[in-house]
Length: 323
Image (tube, rainbow, N blue to C red; front, side):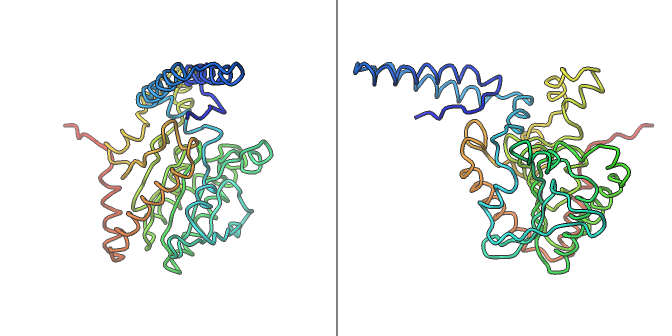
């Protein structure tokens, strides 16, 4: 049986129309007692075929839309599904507690880890409280405090990335958001514990990198990781935010391209249509990936860990020498 679409993206409307036609035929069969089983089965096969065709040929912009889906699991949903005993730790000990960036200790397969995560909100009140998942300087300084705590107690770091970017407001600049992110890049690069980051939705610019300089970088299939949002890129290059689909194509921000270029180490598959269609299946796939990579990293001593991390980031990108 097909699952109805509770929130329909523009490119999913043909699927919704087919599903609606199928539901109407089923209802008519119940009300009239007529046998429409042959037509129902034909429509079911047609809908499944259309779903497979639609979701196996997504454009970069369509994947961005799925990454932003309002029903998509957020960081704390995965924390609840994968970890046990999560104890949230608050505050940066300098200014305030940023609710867009949460962190704390938890158990993963019975072993203690430190979690850093960017959290969006579901309803209007929570979205405002979480600042729409855009951390301010105090969020990154809280993350830095927890990175140092993880080093002190020898806890592996697990970062869950989901942000359109760090908050760009005046107050954020006044409190030196660029400096806060820059310090995190340096300190996470030198952290003497294993670390893994996972892009679970949006991975926007320095806001994502602020908790993403790790030994392994994983990404869910319909997430994106980019130096700028498609809308921001479109506004700069095309002078029109409506060119976001074209910008998404130019940015090559899809998970498969990121894997091919070495930016991410693994693409974690999602259920057909996106993680929101089966959050538990997605959580189990994410858990299996974390288990594999933590096991591999656990075999390295500290010097090997730092050397491999340095080599990983030095190998990114392409450059040419003139002359």
